Length: 129
Image (cartoon, rainbow, N blue to C red; front, side, top):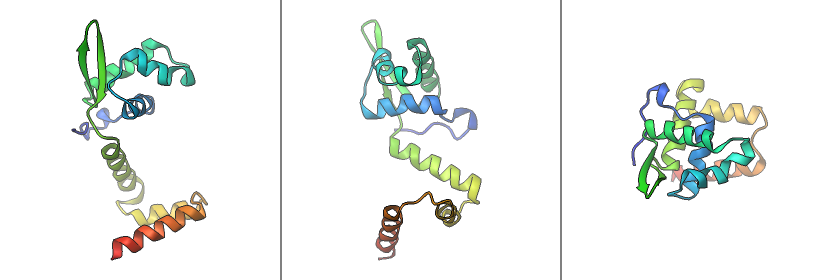
């Protein structure tokens, strides 16, 4: 699978991300099936979902396959790859490319639970071994 271009115009919007989550959960799906998963919660019409799918196809984040008179949509990027690239972009943009200030910010903002901190400590110990 490939990643969308790093050009900011190729970034996946929040609305497009909702569609991607549906496709990462299950694919291939028709536009109607994607709409059934995301539209009601967000107040979207089928036409809105089709527009979002078209944008994702143009960004090469989603591929299409003809299935009779309809299309089946599948993600062309893995969720883990997307999360990794977006995380890196966040750290680069807001924290000068360093993860430690991000963790400090989360701790100071009380955004981490005790369980989160325990897990981070465990991961750091594993990485040091």
